[in-house]
Length: 346
Image (cartoon, rainbow, N blue to C red; front, side, top):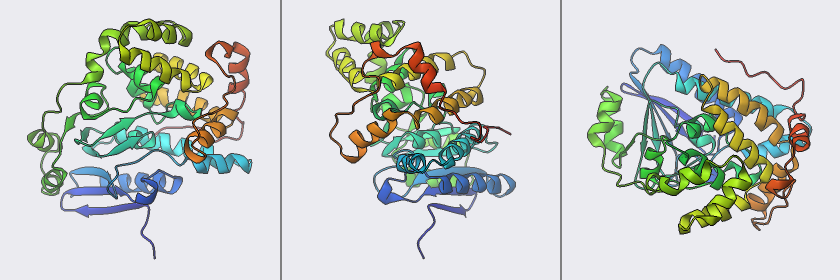
């Protein structure tokens, strides 16, 4: 019998969760969401558990994201299972953020998309020297979700917006500077041992923390902040293209490769998230946008171009930032369905 996609066990005082689909880089599916939610309930009731930790099986990383092929297959059959998955996943992310016991995320290796959702909302978030953290949704015609608009909207200056719109891959120092992680801990085995022994989660992580070095992302605020303060995407792109810093011009190129409609909606959602009362409000906005995104042609085309054929030449609808109109956005937002499950917290 094959192992379950999430390994759940108590090790001393530690409730341990391991995403267990290493061949798929632990991509999160609906069964995994349900197993994680049930395990969190179990560990909350268990007085012997003083902290919970999540990590990933295999040697490549915590999690490469959500199961986009499932969303595509569900769309092809006209089903509504994709919306149900999104609703349950967002409830799980909110649960992690409000969890009453220390929730320690081992953000080792690749941590993208849905992997950020099950880690960056935790109370103790540790990266390692080989961590690569990203929210690359706009490159496949999707929008940042799993609370990503909330996290990136509250990053220093415009660094979160830059990370989202260019699908930037953040190393440990940049992930910490962007507010997606707290500390770099390379000796994860020692941290696990301390948590099993009932040590204070944050204190144990701080004792084992190493200096991640300077953040290139934070230093780049000298050109990131003024460029991304432009009111719209054409303005941001042009400001980046005019800036003399070579990384700014590279960012302009990256911006130009992403889906124009998804990028437009991501820009607004991240900016709006800064003024929302809490994470749950941001997740409600994301639920509206993501249900529509999976039904808009860009999602299937982006997955084809980036993950299936890998030709890197998606044909976006619309094709440019300038072609995104109020009518386009209205058509996009009309793709919700009355029988989609509601997103209700608590």
